[in-house]
Image (cartoon, rainbow, N blue to C red; front, side, top):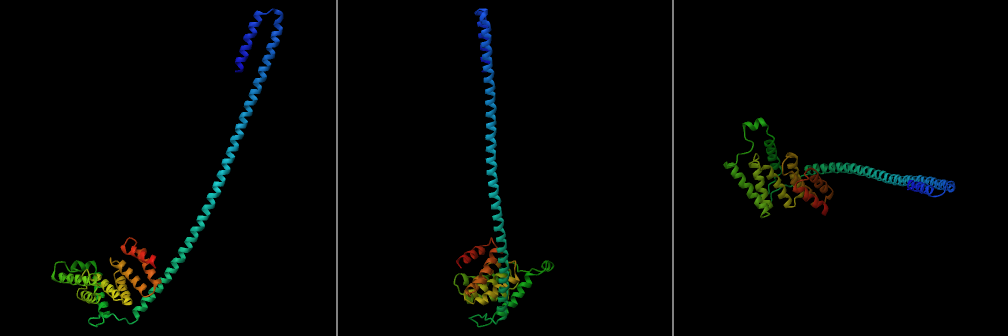
Length: 294
């Protein structure tokens, strides 16, 4: 724009110099110089304004950056504060977890002591129908079952640990087992069912259902509200066959038996053990429901 002004002034001066007399030439030159000075002044002022504008923009940008940095510092302080809070919470949870573990260890020790005490105390595992004590027979046949389950691989290559299905003994055993199970599930005749399960374990200690029969002996004792005897019977199954599929159910029913005896503390410990060791089992869900109810 300034250069256009200069060119216009020069053209005008040339025209005037061609059109006016020579005496006016000096005056025109003076006027041209004056206009040129004004243009120069305007250019300098414009440059100064441009420089000042750039400085203002830079100052504005710097101010914006400072404000952004301050905001970032505040955010960082907030994040650091939250991290510290989380670390404190984690430390507190860790301490609470350790305390809970210690408490559970103490309770488990108390529970084991209680079970030992129950074993030492004289129990009355009797069959109401026959009036015969069955604690010794159950224990002895359980030992037979355990010794059969623990047969070495070399021994199993020479003899069959469990009877082959289809034989007369196996058919008779399964018929006796189904009959006893039906008495429990359909008729709730726990006493008669217990007689048949005990007979099964005594007669077929090497059968694959012998451990199940031992478990159902505990169920029939529980059904007859002989809770201490049921606890001991389930404990025999748990201790002698820790890898058997009936262990979660035995633990669950053992915990329920403790609850029926008024020992809610040990009952919860056992049900929590079911959840911890067998989290995907149906018994774990039942244990969770019972704990929430208690």
